[in-house]
Length: 74
Image (cartoon, rainbow, N blue to C red; front, top):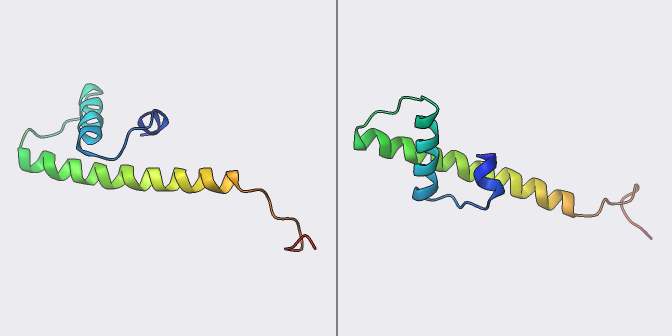
Protein backbone atom coordinates (compact mmCIF):
# COMPACT_ATOMS: atom_id res chain seq x y z
CA UNK A 1 0.00 0.00 0.00
CA UNK A 2 2.89 2.33 0.73
CA UNK A 3 4.13 1.99 -2.84
CA UNK A 4 0.69 2.76 -4.30
CA UNK A 5 0.31 5.73 -1.95
CA UNK A 6 3.76 7.05 -2.83
CA UNK A 7 2.79 7.26 -6.51
CA UNK A 8 -0.53 8.94 -5.73
CA UNK A 9 -2.95 6.08 -6.37
CA UNK A 10 -6.49 6.89 -5.28
CA UNK A 11 -8.67 4.47 -3.31
CA UNK A 12 -10.83 3.07 -6.10
CA UNK A 13 -11.75 -0.21 -7.81
CA UNK A 14 -8.76 -0.09 -10.14
CA UNK A 15 -6.32 0.33 -7.28
CA UNK A 16 -7.99 -2.51 -5.35
CA UNK A 17 -7.69 -4.70 -8.44
CA UNK A 18 -4.02 -3.74 -8.65
CA UNK A 19 -3.52 -4.76 -5.01
CA UNK A 20 -5.28 -8.08 -5.66
CA UNK A 21 -3.11 -8.73 -8.72
CA UNK A 22 0.00 -8.00 -6.66
CA UNK A 23 -1.11 -10.34 -3.90
CA UNK A 24 -1.83 -13.09 -6.41
CA UNK A 25 1.58 -12.55 -8.02
CA UNK A 26 3.14 -13.10 -4.59
CA UNK A 27 1.28 -16.40 -4.30
CA UNK A 28 -1.67 -15.34 -2.16
CA UNK A 29 -4.70 -17.44 -2.98
CA UNK A 30 -7.81 -15.39 -3.72
CA UNK A 31 -10.87 -17.38 -4.82
CA UNK A 32 -12.15 -16.83 -8.35
CA UNK A 33 -15.75 -16.36 -7.20
CA UNK A 34 -16.85 -12.87 -8.24
CA UNK A 35 -18.83 -12.46 -5.00
CA UNK A 36 -15.76 -13.29 -2.90
CA UNK A 37 -13.50 -11.06 -4.99
CA UNK A 38 -15.96 -8.18 -4.68
CA UNK A 39 -16.00 -8.54 -0.90
CA UNK A 40 -12.20 -8.83 -0.84
CA UNK A 41 -11.96 -5.69 -3.00
CA UNK A 42 -14.27 -3.80 -0.61
CA UNK A 43 -12.15 -4.77 2.39
CA UNK A 44 -8.96 -3.75 0.58
CA UNK A 45 -10.51 -0.41 -0.39
CA UNK A 46 -11.49 0.29 3.21
CA UNK A 47 -8.00 -0.61 4.43
CA UNK A 48 -6.34 1.53 1.75
CA UNK A 49 -8.64 4.48 2.55
CA UNK A 50 -7.62 4.21 6.22
CA UNK A 51 -3.96 3.96 5.18
CA UNK A 52 -4.32 7.16 3.15
CA UNK A 53 -6.09 8.97 6.02
CA UNK A 54 -3.35 8.09 8.50
CA UNK A 55 -0.56 9.14 6.16
CA UNK A 56 -2.29 12.37 5.13
CA UNK A 57 -2.84 13.24 8.79
CA UNK A 58 0.81 12.50 9.60
CA UNK A 59 1.92 14.59 6.63
CA UNK A 60 -0.20 17.57 7.70
CA UNK A 61 1.02 17.30 11.31
CA UNK A 62 4.64 17.37 10.14
CA UNK A 63 3.91 20.42 7.98
CA UNK A 64 2.64 22.43 10.95
CA UNK A 65 5.34 24.39 12.77
CA UNK A 66 5.92 23.27 16.34
CA UNK A 67 4.12 25.39 18.89
CA UNK A 68 6.52 27.05 21.33
CA UNK A 69 6.54 25.68 24.86
CA UNK A 70 4.05 27.42 27.09
CA UNK A 71 1.41 27.44 24.36
CA UNK A 72 1.61 30.99 22.99
CA UNK A 73 4.33 33.26 21.68
CA UNK A 74 3.33 36.50 23.42
